[in-house]
Amino acid sequence: MRNIISKTGICGMVAVLLSFMACENELQVQQSYGFSLETMPVQKRISVGETAEIRCTLVREGRYDGARYTIRYFQPDGRGELRTDDGTVFLPNDRYPLDREVFRLYYTSRSDDQQTIDVYVEDNTGQVVKTSFTFQSENGTEETER
Image (tube, rainbow, N blue to C red; front, side, top):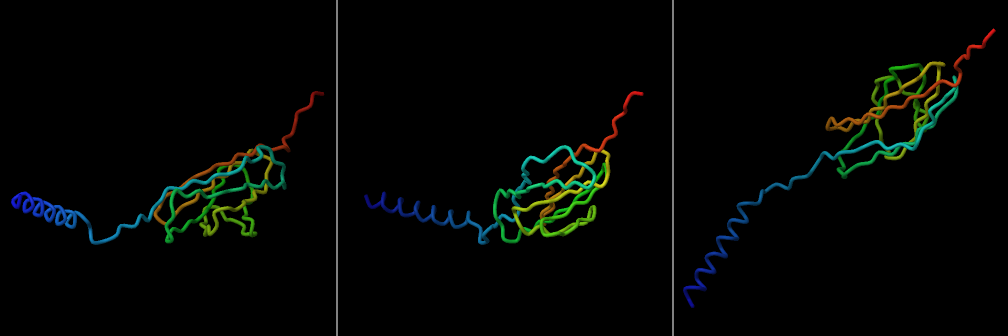
C-alpha cells in the first residue's frame, strides 16, 4: 500500500512539473482579427449631380484595442465625389482614419457615363477589404428616329 501511495505521489509531481514546463511565461494576445464591410442595398441608377447614400457597417470578427482602420477609394470609371457623413470629401487613393463602425458615405455623380467606385478598408496589420459600387447614368441620351 505504501508503495502504491509513493508511486501515485511521484506520478502526480511529474504531471505537475510537466504542466508547468508546457506553459509559456508570456500571455499571447491576438492582435489581428478578420473583418468585412457590410452595406445596405445601394441604388444602381444615378443622374449627374444626384447623390447616393451608402450605409456601411464595419463587422469585426474580434476585438483588439490597438486595431486601427483606414478607408480610401478609387474610381476606375466615370467621375464623381465621395464624402463621409461628417462632410470629409475624399481624394482618390488618400487614406482617411475610420474611427466608427457604423457610418455613411455619399457619392455624388459628376458625369453621365457608367460610374464605378472601389472602397477599400484596411487595418493596421495590412488586411484589406474591397467593396465596389457601380452606377448607371439616368442622363443617357436616347436616339430618336427621324
